[in-house]
Image (cartoon, rainbow, N blue to C red; front, side, top):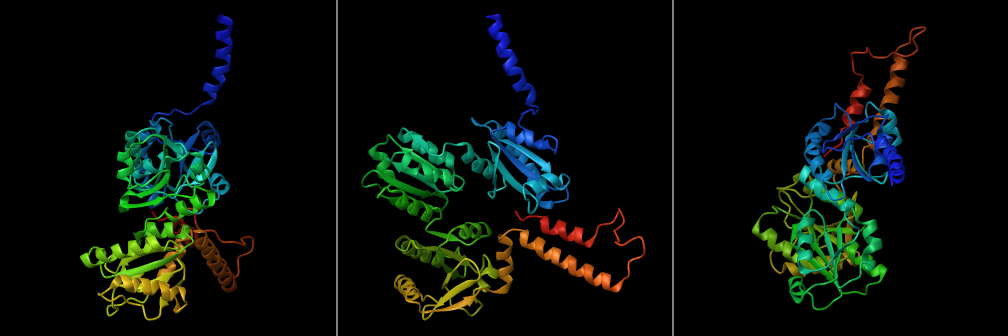
Length: 424
């Protein structure tokens, strides 16, 4: 018996000794010497690649401090770590960083970009999806209720009522960071009534934040299921915000965009109900809206001014081009449902005028593409500046290049730090 214990001890001790990291609910501070060991030691590790001078990094740091103990206490823990990627440039180069902070979740050593929320509570909800099963199997009405409550309101929820998990598994693996997936194996008529189901099997799509629900009764073939899920990753209608613009860029459908004076007005809310009905019947489009009072610059990019009759509807490609539908630019106050239908009919018939969004907003759209374009521009400007400078001043012998004093900061370095400071 003692021999067996000795053999077990010899096998286990090396595993413990190579694990040099103390997991105590705090954010691990990594460097070049232990970074690779860290991402290979933990099944799930969330890494903040930061720079000490970055303002967004400084604001993110206390949020990570609050999230770390909660994430490390999960049934399947997520370790939170950070590394000064400005100092350890080899690490930054290896992971192709394009700004600070850059956030990545390493799952069994494989990195995935994190583009989710950064407030501690929402960050915890988001990262829980990475350690949850691809498809959660629910065995009772209470399990369904608890699953929906735990999922929260930040992401769509798909529940297959009376559906086998294999029907969702492949898609769930691909779209795990975008939504929650589950199947209910045991449920009552109460649950069916709660979700308005006429029969089973059925796939229910929920957007709790928008009080939005859609039901799919089949056919449960891979292509049909994928089409339903992808069309329901976004709610039927959604407001235009900086965050929703990022979601819209991932959706390939054209956007039926409505511009109103104020999203909070009663008349606007009543109009949005009509949009929801139209969206449900026209799934080839995404329906979105924005209020001039909520985002004036955005509205003005689509030729909306003080004298423009509102609501105004256009069809936008999500990039530079939008289409004004001839004879349906503005929606009158009477019989708006018929006017929305006519708007879509005329668009499909090609009765449109193609236009380009305003230049001020194009700059914002470019920022959504990432900071790599900014790097290129800064580099080209630096080359032009160098050529002009060399043309005006002859370098002194023995000193072919002029470097700034050690206590100063060059223009190029200052520009680089500004462009690297990612937006929240």
